[in-house]
Length: 249
Image (cartoon, rainbow, N blue to C red):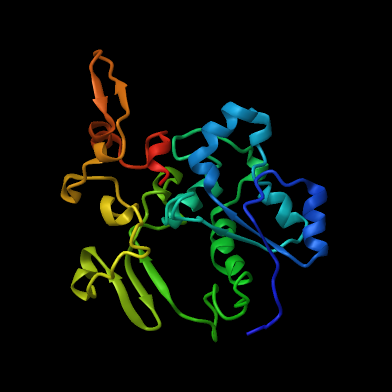
């Protein structure tokens, strides 16, 4: 493992080309997170859709040869769920469905996945040790609920792992692999919303026993003139289908 320090610049939603050049000259890398997937509507309302087209300018960073890694910056900026971030990178859309980026600032599925795996390994100085399916690298793996490379784009944000193996041991299993599941780990950090509101990967359902009204008092008008709480709306659209800041814990 290299002991050389890697200088990291985070988020960089509004970085200019000149400052990307400066990051490269310093030997630094840029870690991008999907905050705009949750706050894009707010950004557009405040600064305009034109300004939002390169927030951040990921394609330009890659063209200029700067190391880029993808992530979520959970627990307060976003969700832990990596598939929401991959959906954002690929479609250029917010979770609420607003299109932010033109095609030239979006990534294909392989490029987005590479930023999340090989790209991110550079930031922990573990490039060459993990992130690729090649001999000699760490073989942690996840079996997904669908084929990331072939399912419709809108289904990417609903992907989840049904089997996760780390260090040769099963650390998570569900569905047909549920008999392999180890005991659940305690929520960390203990104050994470996950402890009270369940996981982020699945749409909210009755089995979670969640009362969203404890976190959100928002209501919306239905077509027949009645008002509905977001708890009712969640049952129809799922947890991450709404354009509401109260879900960006």
